[in-house]
Image (cartoon, rainbow, N blue to C red):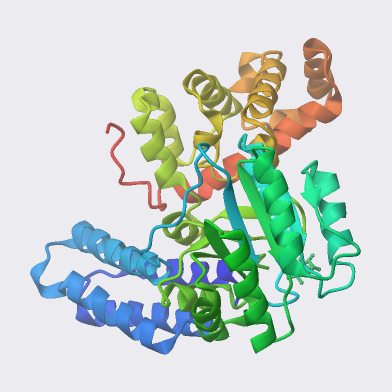
Length: 445
Ligand code: GDP
């Protein structure tokens, strides 16, 4: 079952709470049965599912809580808390600092996505303003250096490797020393993998680790292996004592939920997930946003909280509209306007569901420019258009041409904005609408 299906099943079960005339033990049991069944089908370990069920029942204590809405909210909260817990390793992760070079050592089995992930990670930090470099210490797989070189060149990241040196420890050390001397802030070392866990691989990892003294060893793991993730993570933990995990191939695969919960059970924090083969397909993993996204809630609640935190919630109409699932082009424009005043942009934009990731791709500055350009185009829309849900543009395409001309841009760019608006509005409608979980949130902090 893909994660979205799991989310949908859990949502449907929770929705039963709204339909049931009285919420009693029987209703709660039926809902928990649905939720637990869905989790088991998504390959979550049976013991963890059992614990979730028990904990929700304990937290809710159905006979001691008050009436309808209250009961519904308490149950929803208890289920959400347990789902968060299921994917949370409750451990701190290493945070690089600009004061010194941080060395990341990447380990994992062949084919897990290690080399791809090295460049994704380097690019992630580079976009955030870190001076980043890559070292290829994979001498086992033919073509590994070429692959890293190609990826690194595309992403404009300095790299180090050798076609002639056969000793991975020597290459790792040389590369790290070189980049350290050049004051690189994040140095990512790719190591070789093997098809299966074997002594030779673990020995090589240990030697490289002893030589380069990593600040953080990251285990790259294939997210499609389901519950087997737990034993694999345990074996690597023993051999390489990694501090965190990046789980790859999480682009909608059936066993994703199983692997994540299995790994969390080993108290090993997942820091990123790979969601595709491209450079930008790497997302920071945090338990709460992950579960919310899985449940199709985007980060709407978090967005509303952030907006309120930052004082943007003063625009009561906008907040009310979002909660009602109503959202016009003008609402999007006003949000952009408010957001650009607040900075840093990416912090807030990242929380907006439906906001295409490429909108904030590149540096903070590039992201801001893109938003300003969109606002500049929207400045050429009239009041009727701004207050609409964009359909009038599709009914009368001369409007698109007029806006493009007025803003000195192209029809394609205007269409792009309308597309992005539509994605965004769709999300707001499904998540923030009357049935959505935001419906009962207060407007004021
Ligand atoms: P390595 O042997 O561990 O270094 O693995 P590679 O980096 O060569 O990746 C193996 C394959 O997995 C390649 O075809 C990658 O494009 C693919 N891959 C890596 N990460 C992801 C991911 O997050 N999603 C998908 N769909 N494919 C991935």
